[in-house]
Length: 174
Image 1 (spheres, rainbow, N blue to C red):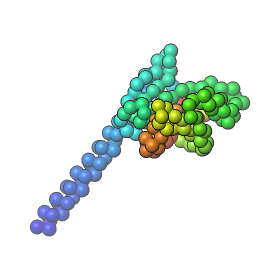
Image 2 (cartoon, helix red, strand yellow):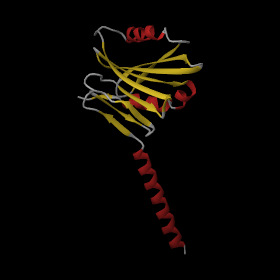
Image 3 (tube, rainbow, N blue to C red):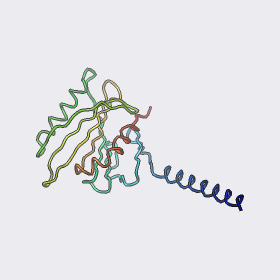
Image 4 (tube, helix red, strand yellow):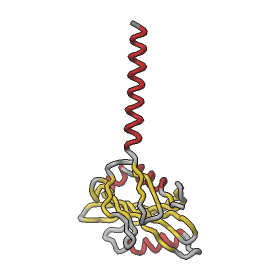
């Protein structure tokens, strides 16, 4: 009886580990496209591509379910070699100042495959508080990639671990 119980327990543990391993590996997908020189991991299958990059428009866009729950856009910026991250963020912030209800947030240092700075902000859309989180990642002295996330404030906050994960896994192909 004890031997049968041990075999059953062992089989149950093995099956549980196998199920967990399969479900964990199935959740992450890699973005890669021949029209851009970068890749990143999407940690959740809820992220859906809404704009595929092309040679004419090299930006990629994703939504997390719908645009208000989470919107992601990746852009490549060519900058002067002597530009500081503060200069680049300042240029982007100047554009945001005209958005209704814009309030600048704090900046944070960030490190993943590329190093950079995160800029947080809030604004109003249709009477709802929205949030933005932009990752400025330096690929080289003349290239910055921006990964912009926007959405309802509470929704974007709830997927912050995913936004950080996407930015951490962002890398330039050689």
